[in-house]
Image 1 (spheres, rainbow, N blue to C red):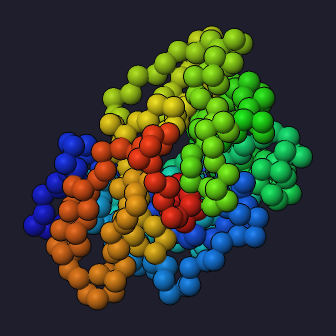
Image 2: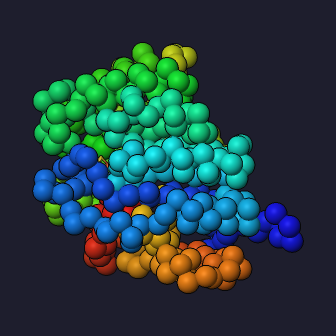
Length: 335
Ligand code: SAM
Ligand code: SF4
């Protein structure tokens, strides 16, 4: 890039924003109980969703101007966006050393893994909340467990590893399976991340009683498999552990409810319709789509992005009196 020195994106609390999450669609082929209603949601119109060229342009600005190195493609379900691998290739062409990853429910992964890998995707996070076929049907509201397992195998085969599994733990549903997931992490060398259920579900079923605090999960695992904390040089929302006996794999905890990590949050999100969100729980976002479509220059977009990041919220207030649930649910934001 000519004429530009990279400048870090900082908010008014001094946090760096260098982890960009891009939602490529609000649509999904699952109906996870903690995310979507059984009947689905009203999807965005095709024209309202950013085109690949528009996403690529914003990604270029984040990478070239602001030194962003980590880009996660998410949704909705990113693999339902037609030819999403082409977008991965376009972003990869900005700089093939970028850490481009994807969060997916895995159901289309067997078909797509090779193309994604060839396009430059480095790793995948596959969301899998249960190892039981019946419970899968109950939690994802789809009979797709086996296809997700096939997707995981395909991802491993093409080298989209180390594989991370995202497990949203809900009391009374899958909280009895956490030790089984730790066992799977050891057997398959997976990194399993246990995520606390957040009030971002469209059905409004969230209540604190359904949240299993990470501490409790960790204790259950440590009864069988002692853990050793991995220290990070960068701030990370997940606290990560390896197994003390040297077994492969590891576990991590995303404790957004019981131990918010807002003070070190380095994330910024772009919604499928081009809204910049500085927090999952933001009550407003900065729309970039119309600016893109009205011929705004990179300098202009850069100024809007910098101002939006500067205004990043100090933190969310889950569990406190002032908490206001965002209108959008997780699939509309891009988790
Ligand atoms: N559809 C893809 C998937 O499920 O992996 C990507 C989008 S999904 C919104 C991203 C992540 O958010 C998934 O790991 C999902 O389990 C998680 N998630 C969705 N709703 C959540 C909630 N209410 N609390 C915590 N995590 C949630
Ligand atoms: Fe779809 Fe992912 Fe939401 Fe499940 S969590 S309904 S797979 S977007």
